[in-house]
Amino acid sequence: MPVANGSDASRAALLSAFGCYVMWGLMPLLFMGQHAVGFDAPEILAHRALWSVLVAGLLVWLAKQGGQVAAVFRNPKTLAWLALSTLLIAVNWGIYVWATTHHATLEASLGYYINPLLNMIVGMWLFRERIDRWGWVAIGLAAVGVLFQALALGRPPWISIALAISFASYGVIRKRVPVDAQAGLLVECLLLVPFGLAWVLWLQQSGAGTAFSDPVHTLWALSNGPATVLPLVLFAWSARRLPLSTIGFIQFLAPTLQFAVGVWSGEALTGLRIASFAFIWGGAAVFAAAAFLRVRAEREALKASAEPV
Image (cartoon, rainbow, N blue to C red; front, side, top):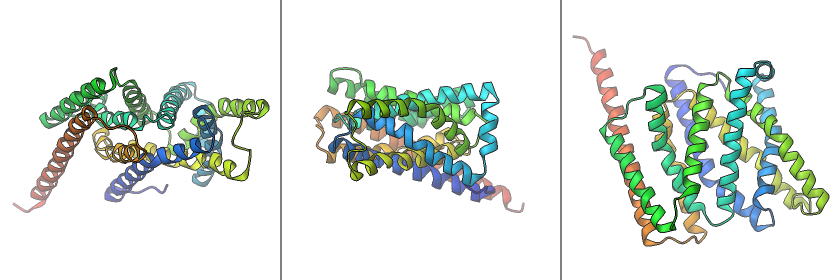
């Protein structure tokens, strides 16, 4: 991705963030489609790991960042941090693929509604980003929404909680590791590919594999590469250039699309679940309104400071 400066850099980072969240919001359709033709969750996950490395490698080659990848493997500390981010994203992928192929897309979408608000808390804790009173109101509304979701499910929404924590933690690590988006992602894919390859080979040898039964199934499997890599590259690139609070605001787009997919696919939407999402949406609305007013106030202050006295 070309380097930009000033307002161009901010605009590029925002567009990257919007792009990745639209892709993630529609991702359940890909996994549901694969499940419908015979793929189970572990096989989908294995093919995500296997084919992502090819797309990630192509992006690194185009960006001429091969030297940066090699440097990571020569730096044990950086490699250790990326190994941890690899573990977190693998956990996140596994839970999400399982949820979207087992009629739990609504619960998964709740996790990604929680995540932006969790990002605010993490941003305050680790990066000294300030949360105003409206931010705390948004967090409080989301907490009530999680409580209603637990009542609706008859248990804590473990899928939602695990997705939110794993991806928020992943974002923190990628923000702190001094490696460009494409290079870091290729390292993560290289660390994952042995596990994906081993599972795919085992499936083929045991006769349980779906991917290579015909060309259509092979295309389904191959689609996991670009579908996995492109939004992650956009996310990692934008996360290093935008405040976590801004990333959190834009991230509401993904769970909204996921929620729509879950309803479209026929998942049960009970009264308690509607109440849960109502509180979550209320928190998102408060967050969005506060962010809009804050940006407008900053622009007006900047404009006033530029006027001659």
